[in-house]
Length: 218
Image 1 (spheres, rainbow, N blue to C red):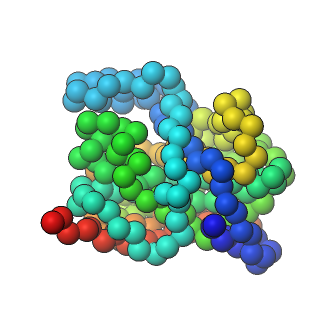
Image 2: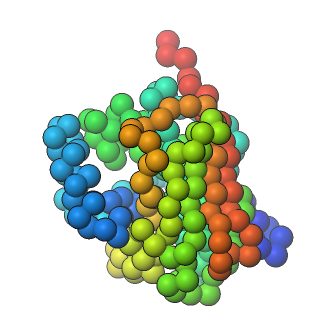
């Protein structure tokens, strides 16, 4: 069971029956294809479809401030997250924390071996219109800027929601909607990940902060 707080300060419990991460969701399809080509040159198999839908165990979701990971080569990425609760729809913030060393072998596995942190604050939304494109996504690793962009760089959230709903009839779910490009030339690994989604039409910014604890290998 996950516990969130909405814009009115009310507690919102949710036990998701489905958790999906949408990948390759950049709105600029030429940039998406360039990224896929780069992955292929590194020996990583291209996705069979775009966007790619990665179905994950809901048990990976957490609002804890500390997560345990197997690999020191893991890091997060800020993502807008849609939360469905029996017909009600909320927007939250999450991090697709991923083991980058495993990613070179299998992308789905690299996602599945890491917890998926979420911020506790969420906002109920009546509809997903173009106004959400203006929301700013930012992240930092160990207080150094890591990402900065807008939701408008991602496939429209309404389109992603429609695509998800076409695949399942589950009404209580978490859908992670993709991310924006890095400010760095490659992944950065650190201990603390901080992220924020801000701007109208949000009543208040959605924020997330967590630290990673690398498990000692026996």
